[in-house]
Length: 169
Image (tube, rainbow, N blue to C red; front, side, top):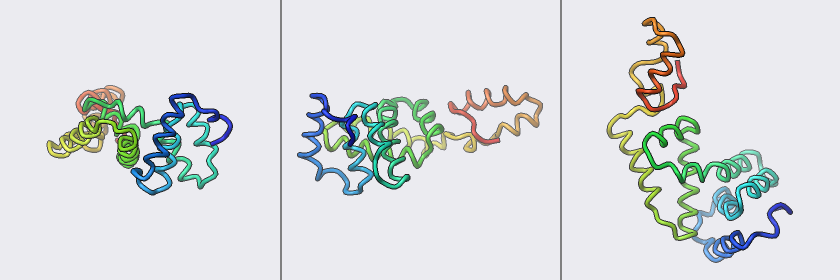
């Protein structure tokens, strides 16, 4: 883990002890095990350790992403915040981070309430055909521009309608 993580604080040590006792609850893939290991540490220490992992670049970047973004996803509590997270990081990253949080929940006996709430939001978006990404809208920024609305105003209109940041023209 590097010198930056050692010695662990009391809280970090308690989380590490818990991890050691309950590691068998975590999916066996290396990416999940490394992610939950580093999430035992304070974010700055964990990020530095993730950058120094002696693994392939893809695995290193996934673990680093888990360290940097799991807290952000954990605190997503509203549909608007969920849409913003999905737009900023994408569905694939969201699903990976949700899996990391599920592993962490099993380790630390946390409530599954937040995970279920986020999954419910995703299902509601699908069930009700609620647009998340700009390309989900029937009208695009280009359509509004062609109708004579200035580009910056067109983007604002779509942001307001979708509750997200338009990414496609």
